[in-house]
Image 1: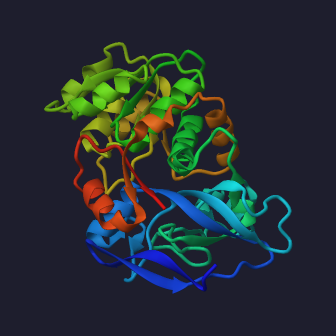
Image 2: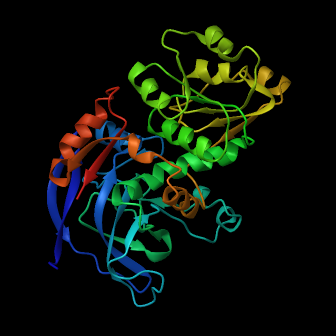
Length: 348
């Protein structure tokens, strides 16, 4: 092994350059991972296009990426759960484990969270678009034999889906609505179906994306051109146990209050850009629970188990693949917001 590694550096908005940086050395509780697959997330695209997301602005140069999988190259002296040659996926958030949120099991809300590739990137905050990545062993999970690196990289967005579905508490055979069928909406859909939901209705304004969701046993509705009053009528009997919003459209969020049963749960999964005028009177009168679903906690083992059984057809969400040297082109495609693009994967 050489003493340097290739990295994809975001040097300015819209510009990624391939460079070499020093090879990291694992500490006693670390693993050095040869990265093999990295998915491009919507937050990565926001950093690429604008240099910032809702959590803040990055400083250039910056390494993006947090949906990733690879092979253990070397393990620290105290690591007993992993060894060189093990295929793994990486949970990208590094949390303190000591604050009230961490000790209560909500480590996704850790006050000192550091997250791979994000603007909040302290310890272990370097992004995944590198040949070799240094990670704490306790946040590195061995892949089942029948789960490849591409699906290993999908564990992260699937975890977002699982966290949301857990928050929605849809009963077996229950009815759910997913507003927006981008990658996260699609992950919520397949997670709902895998965990026993009955009818799942998914909405979007892109016919091609809706057609893809039909193949995953969803009832689809094209909502292009609909105003809030029309969106309210999507379920005239107000029969949804939960609505999952990934659209962040104010009219859709308020319409969701009329699609839910009394006492239903509105799970906000998409990241709002700012303030939203919410119909609090309807929320109050109908006893709706509004639940933000931010990232995830304690999801990776469950997602890996579901993937190993074949119950999550996540491979269908990967629409485009690029080699590492074409990272610039991969991000340009992801940033195009083309309806034909669901998940862009970079393979190393």
